[in-house]
Image (tube, rainbow, N blue to C red; front, side):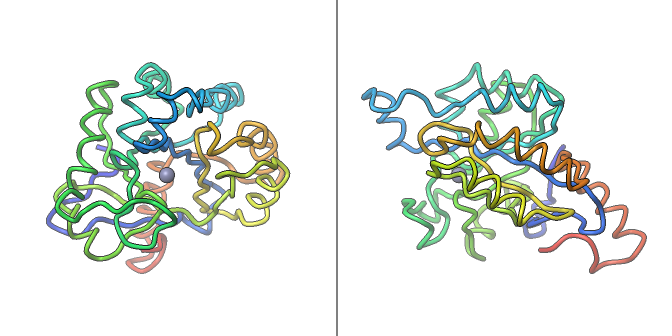
Length: 247
Ligand SMILES: [Zn+2]
């Protein structure tokens, strides 16, 4: 199963892929909190699912990985299935309700430690029920975690996926800024984080075609996490431990 880690050991934490290759991973977080859901109910926000992003990835045959919150999948089951139906895309989860797993993580509310494991497992179950696809790739909300959080979620058997390139698309109203910030930071092995639209990522869809073109100009190839990690595993076996992935 993609991302599986033996629960007997602490979850693997991946911040980037092999630096000696030319592959990069484009990743999209599908955030939804209870507050955001309330805005949808009140009609103050129309949508947190900008499917133009998915259309652009498909049009350009660009592999990408999506990290879904449980609340997002419950709100957008058809969109979830549409993404999961395409082999171009790898899947991961991003907690049930996008609360933080440690203090001082942006302005996110805090998950009590006894709820952490459920916050990780619930969306894994939802994704499997909706799409038939199983995954153990997981990203912490805000990318924030500590040793206590890693210990609490260990029975879930996940691989924790961070990122080394923050596209800056969250609440950013300039596509130019997103394109520049992404392309100046990116290098071989980068994991780039973006967001799946709505008012939390208003210009991501405008920036994405230029990001994809810019990666290509730099000779970088988007790929999926599993291919990334398989390549790194091969490299590790050849060179011995200590090379390849950061922890
Ligand atoms: Zn998020």
